[in-house]
Image (cartoon, each protein chain N blue to C red):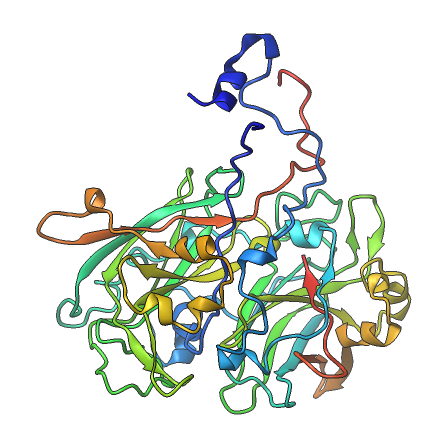
Length: 208
Length: 262
């Protein structure tokens, strides 16, 4: 017998269930308990960069919006720097911009929104620039293990065309499932997205 | 002492202590999806329309995956890990008082320090304080049902609560959830993000739960069951259950390489 490696096994995932709000966004469950709460607002008054709203829905295989889904996003700041010690790129960190937020979908419409800033281009470990993007994690009743995807920006056509991750997607038509569409509404910049869990326009999900 | 431990002590190997892992790319160990529930698990009916059908696209970890949000004590309040007190209005909540404690580890066995652990649960009667829960068991006026903690330097966390009750749910006509506590854990990188559920040793509903049995691996399922830990209980006050959580391991990062002896 060779020596044992003795690695541990990852704990198995379980669905977040329909009442995920209690633990992660108690105000949505209908009560107030913590002094400090996490939210869908990443932007602070001092944040650098373009203020944007991310707005979208997650649709099931029948095209119905999930009304009990929870999304988290993780993103770099406007300089393309993640607020984490493992990002050693040159962009400046900003105090107060964590780069993370969570949002539950509206119980009636299924709409999910985040108030944030548009991230800058990321520099990968080989020094290559990657198109600006937001990392998305999705949990809900009926989702047995959290789903990872990304949102890219429709006005970054050249950067998107050169992005190493988007180019990993074999079918060009499927790359479009990750592009959020820019529009302006009452002077505010809104990027709209739809995440399809199934169907001919199924969103690309990653095994990260 | 096993063979591996002996080998590490052999001076002829001249191995530095602590062992410095070899050059890595900082990526997380490949997730072993055979121990996780599949997305499509028809015995859990809600998964049928909510499960992607295309293959996941495997992504070599970039800086976007090996980084993740950092939390600190400033994010928490002093009662956040005490579910007996953090929503109490005019007394303690009803139910069996319990302590839940354990460590957040990674697959190499190292503790994951300063990471956020969040938990939520039904009350002792099996009712959630949630506007969408209509089960006939009553709301407990002194119980909110959620809390959070930051692991210490060794990955240890603990909280105090009451044992949740089982409850019926709409899957089959007579489906009941075993007593459970939901857990959300971050780790150091966003690719370690995990939500799971902890169950209680000896619960007869465990083997018939349509959600728990989505897990195809018997050992992986057993690892979600917390044993009674009498040594950690408080006499005449609270029983204790122990629940360790394992997140994905990580290869060393390209910027952390040290020269031998440093």
